Image (cartoon, rainbow, N blue to C red; front, side, top):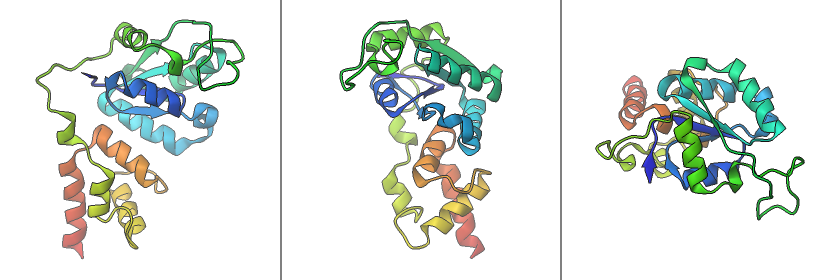
Length: 200
């Protein structure tokens, strides 16, 4: 699978699944129009964009462009690339009815179409010499082992990590995990956790 330096932002979870089958990178979702009212989510997306770059990949229908235009004004433009899928008439297999405009979304695109859209956007494809994803990926099992989930004091420990990283205090464990894997490192998180232990 091709590794990508930038993170990718799509509209929904089915888009996330489709893109993750094509490229190896962090894939985030706007939750459709929910992004308009979620300042914390936007803050996290902005941090990821500033750190590693972000490619916006929304559907080619009107709703996709409303989201895209909102993000143009909300995110640092020098850290954003725009990827566009073509207008293709049809509907995704899982749906009973197609979209209002009758176009396939990102979810319905073939892998080669998504790759082409990313290439045309100027995506940075990493070479084979880069470190393997397994070296940097932090898992839910790690979070449990470190007491960041599944323990009586996990919420308090996560809150301390969020504060140390200057992140929104009500981010979920999953959102924190995604953020750390996007822009942080295992070492950075271990250092934060050790500072709590030494401070006890």
